[in-house]
Amino acid sequence: MGVYPQAAAGWPWNAATIAVKGDPIADLQEDLAAEQKARATYEKLIDLCADEKDVIDVLRFLREREVVHFQRFGEALRCVQDKLAEKKYYMNGNFM
Image 1 (tube, rainbow, N blue to C red):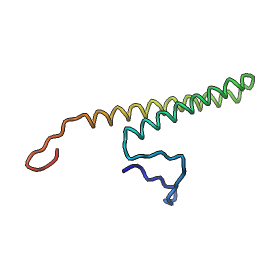
Image 2: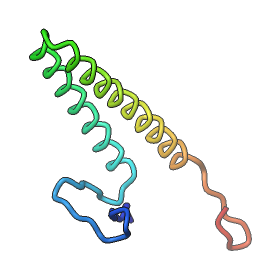
Image 3: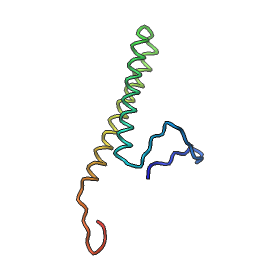
Image 4: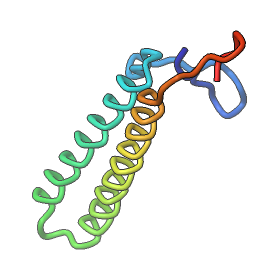
């Protein structure tokens, strides 16, 4: 029920780091946590490289990218939760 990861050429791709359960809420929560962990890692690296301006610029860009990813996953999670909260109607044996 979850995503099926593939390489760009279409070959199946597998890795121990893929945490897809087939439950969209659980999967999106996992994605949110991964983005937060990456953001925290970039912040620690920025602190370690305080005197390297060029390195800090790149790390700040990467950290901001993680923030944007976190926001998009949060929006997706809200959309999924809203969709799952909708009432379902049955008419003439058809699901609507």
